[in-house]
Image (cartoon, rainbow, N blue to C red; front, side, top):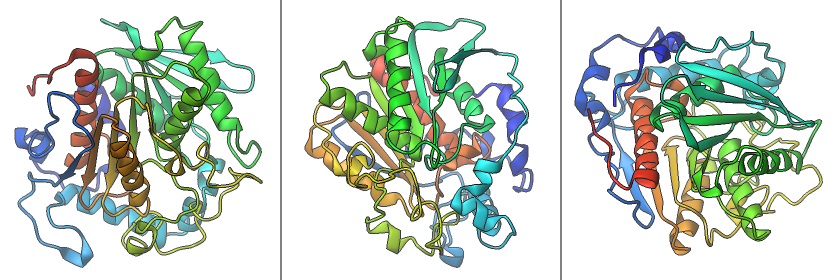
Length: 372
């Protein structure tokens, strides 16, 4: 898959990454991450960056990480741990105070806004050859404390591209502390119901996609739908999902000093979060890791090996395996929380997006797409 040129203008934040020709090498997006022709039962893949000839382990970094991935990880660590904005980044305060101009919609797309009463949402669609039968419901990250931001509309464009033209719905769901649980779940449910009624999409033609808190919210929404006897979506894509708000997994300790974004501090939104309110953090609708995955649709879960939230994905994958869910679970070595935010600027993120594209092809086309 060759990504279209529009994405390049959103990768300027990685201009300090050394320039090389590694992104142009065909092996940088195919080796060790090729999906099976059908989703296996809890297939677990470790993705190393085979493109990079540097395989040494500097300063505790995983061998096999690309040079670009290594530099971006160090940049994130510096910003989160040594810069003046580091603390506000970890706590989510920076995200809440962030002000952005209206997103400039790239030429290949149209975007329509909708007022849902308690929240607003936008629908991104292709100008050429749109897929009008399928839709992606994207639930953004931000620790349940940050509103949607422009980076997620870039995500929407990538989802549109890798899905061969599916519309992408992006609700700006209510967040804490002003709107604690169950506000986010209510808004996600309202969006899903709108898509499957007013939007005229069949439930099985809806793919839920989310990162971090949004990934956990995708799973919580699916549990809610199942528990209330409603039709389930066709699949779930979860990037670095936050599924355990009790922070009880092993990786919260083993990766405490490795995680470049949230590591080294107990004062981050991982530990201090107002979303649960007075509710039990182990409620599966808040922390899906404590729930059942019986009857779930196929899932793709991607996570970085250096994340404190690694255990969140591992726990869900194990439970999904036991429940017989069709699952693709990939651990990207040396990667940080939501490394897919690098779009196609680093090999690991580019691979992750291409893996997500194969997920769409497996779900809706039953075969591997061309690697051209």
